[in-house]
Image (cartoon, rainbow, N blue to C red; front, side, top):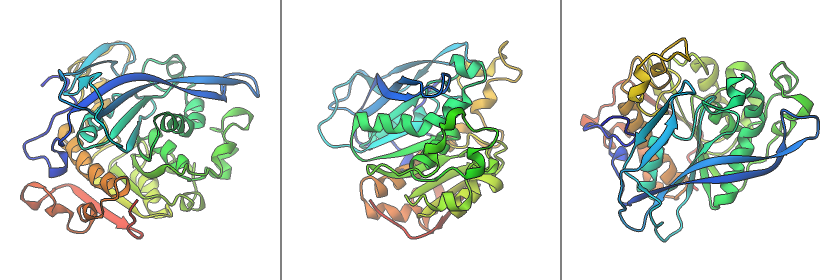
Length: 374
């Protein structure tokens, strides 16, 4: 069971169970071409290579047992994660909608890897991005100047991967990935932020003032989205975001702020919105894979143990993963596959939809705005 991304607890809700499709996985590179060079002179342009982990329904069960080499949160130690997908298995025939995973600052494409194998088994393609300048071992992040790139490039990185892979899609974004998802979906960055101390140079952030959502983007799932607590949006900017939005967050999130950030986004977005709250959980609620075994060991590169980047002091990581998978699947089935019957799993009687004994202690699901299908 060590370092696995595919764990399912015996008491997991119904939507966390493995789906009917065998799963394949491939690693590929997508180029986001001709983007602003945030580290160069005014007007400088650069191509952005993005490493993507792509999970997909496979034509037949493969060898399985995929290994995922990656870096620990300290940016130095190599670790290997394990799953059930078949590496480079033949894709199944069919038109499968796309889900893009966008990690936080810092993070990497495997931080939310539990969504990848799970959703692919239920008939989705899942593309998880290594955002250049924002991963654990990236030189720009380690030099502490990757935030500018993150603010400018997050929406475009996701759009480039979506264009390369094609089809209708949704975005699951954690923290800064949630920021990028909201901006891509139409949440305009507020004018004071555009001219404030965090603003990137040369007016590079101006394109985020009034973004136009891509037609292929159907819904977003921000988890602990970062920004509202720092005034990146105001109520008017969030009201411009009208796509269906399932927010997830911990009520003790000290990074993005629950009352000042996550809940305000829920109250202010202009489209149908849901808020799934993990009571007493912190910033990584539902997003992070279980802490790798190596993360339990002290690191000479960090002043605090890497374990705390993945783990939550109040919740079991696998339980949160399974709950997040359950609700994400129902939301995506409605808004990407157009399965209106699945909307009941997001309604007032949600505890009846596969939770052991009809109970889900410590969870709260709220909804505002009209329900909407794809």
